[in-house]
Each structure stands twice: as structure tokens, then as C-alpha cells.
Image (cartoon, rainbow over all chains, first blue to last red; front, top):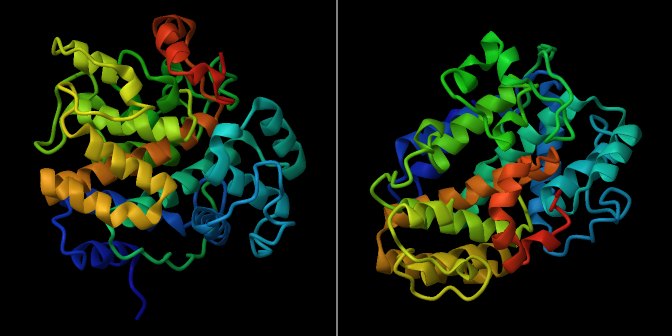
Length: 252
Length: 113
């Protein structure tokens, strides 16, 4: 019998010889459960195909420069579930995110014919895989295999997203909060642009919320500039965050 | 956030720590070992196990695991920000203008300013 997504993560964490926090294991298990299941705009096979491009891009020891197509240069295997143009976009987001521009985004949408919301869900898959696999690599633990794709149709759930001043993608503004977004918006006086960025797809907001709460700081603790789990101080966390972001040439 | 969390504790912080050589700092304990973990994870995977061991030697395994988790988190956040074209509101840009210039962050392609 094949392993469940949760047991894949648990066995990698438990065999590591490290005391990995249960909430961190649970967070990674949660996004692994969603990874190859039907999403909001992509089915399980398509989400898994996106995940495979992410893994290939992360593993590429000599990635081509950002302007070179990963699919036509043979870095990514053809997969009938995804167009080569979308494979290229996923590869570039994974490997060269700091080089993306609005012109690139517009051209990519023309070439792939995907909607803003489908792109947000692509990001959901990219961040799930990048978080789980990079954590495993950094901590020196076994890398979790991907789960098996599940059958079923995407939910196709629309949100009242509107064009935004601070993003290429439309977002749901605080005053338009829906039931699905309540867990992420409710009680907060303002929502940082980078958090609001994924709001047109609540399932992607869920990924962000669950992962950042376990990997970094729970959203509601962000205002406490001395918050700690008892290991890293807040300043140490911000230092690690800033140094990695600088390596990735992420201005935000 | 690093600047805010340092000033909240009346600690002086040289922000060049973030991009340049990470020396010992009152504001960020074990900055060299933490920087080494981050740098190896990006530039030299073969040095990663040594970087992990050095951090464990100074702290403990739990702290090392949490540092790895923060790196993983910002592998996520950077891709959200750059994949969605997220930009700072004008008032925030004003507040960080001196820092982004002095660290050269405003030269990034991703500086949507």
C-alpha cells in the first residue's frame, strides 16, 4: 500500500534523528496532502506536473539563464498535463524569481492563456514544494517523495478579487472579505501586500498561513518584535530572512 | 523587520550584516554561523553539513532546525512577492529608502519602485 502524503512527511522527519517540532511536521504534511489533490483551478495531475517542474528546477546544478527556455533546452521533460510555455514559467519562478517583471508576466499570460487565479495557484504549488524540499535539504533529512495524484475536478471557486495597486494579480480587498478568507483576514486592521497577494485563491492563502506560522512566525504574533519559540530570537529570524531574501534579490 | 526588532530593544545594528560579511553582532547573536548556513544553502551545498554542525555547536539542534525553517519560509515569501509583482506602498518605500539605497537593494530587478 502506498504511503499517504502525511506519512511521507512524517517518516522523513521521524527518521532524521532531529527533534523537529510537531507543528512544523504537521504544516509540511498539510501542504503535501493538498499537493496532488484537485485544487481550485488545476486538477491533481496538473498540480503534480507543476510540482515536478519545481523539483527539477531546484535540483538543476547549472540552470540556464532566465531568458532561456527550460523546456526547449531540455532541462524539463515534456509532460502532456502542462504546456511548454507554462513549464518555462514555473521553472523561471522557481529558479529566477527575482528577475520577473510585469512585462514578463503579461507575455507569459499571453503565451499560456492562463488566468490570474490559475497563476496564483501555480505559485501555491511552487511555494509548497520549495518550502518542503528546501527545508529537507537544509536540515539534511531525507527528501519527501511526491504523493500520488488524486482524481477529481478543481473546485473553480471565484472570489471578488479586483485589480490592485500593489500587485500584478488581482486581490480581494479587506472590505470584500468572504467566508473563505475570514481565517486569514478577520481581526487584522491591515493586511500586508505580500499576504494579500494570494487572496484570489483562498487555498493558496491557507498554504501561506500554515507554512509561515510554523516555519517563521504566526501572523498574529508579527507585531511582537520580541516573539520567539525559545530557539532563535526575533532578530536572528529576521537576519536569516533578510540574508536569504538578499541572495534571492528580492526587493520586497 | 530586522531594523525594527533591533531598535525596539535599543540595539545598534549595522544593516550591512544582511548582505556583506556577517561579523559578531550584539543585535544578532551567532550572526556568522547563521549567515554561513544561509550562504551555503544558496552557493555551496557541499558546505552545508559543516555549516549545520557549526551552528549546532554554538546553539543546539532545535535552533538549527528552526533556522532551516526560516530559510524555507523565505524561499516561499520571495517567490510570492516576485511572482505576484508585490510592491510596497509609497509610505513604506519612503521609510526604507535610505536602507535600500545603502544596501544596493534598489538596484534589484525586483525593485518595483
